[in-house]
Length: 171
Image 1 (cartoon, rainbow, N blue to C red):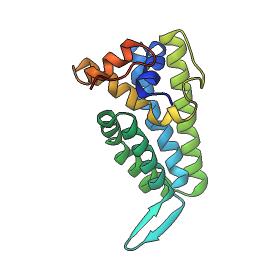
Image 2 (cartoon, rainbow, N blue to C red):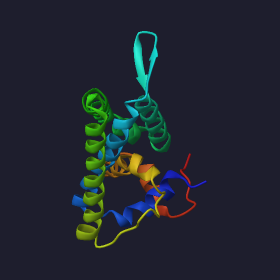
Image 3 (cartoon, rainbow, N blue to C red):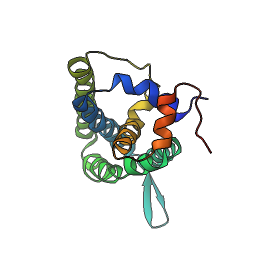
């Protein structure tokens, strides 16, 4: 099983430009938003509240993000609340055709921005070689971990990333 440090080590050289990193950060939330819209249509009343498939997706994303790196995972989860609200309480309440058009439009813009950022700012691209579509959900964890490194935090993890494949944290 590949460790988070190993995954981050592969991801870093392909995401060195600050503008590209910012676009990837926003792009991850756009991707999630576009999926939450149709999932907001699948509702299940539970007690006095209504849960949706969008809630289930967010719970899975947050649990996975926290399992990768708990601090960055929790930070990544914060913007998911307004993302869910915008998708479910606003767009999912539109007629189905209009909601689908918004979701598809957001997804198209997201892909254009992220691919454009790679081509223009990174002068390289990686396709889906860094973990496939799952990466679209949790890329903010990578970006926030790098931000934590720059703030002087998570230095043991940083050392593990810089040490190379197979390195482990010192006890």
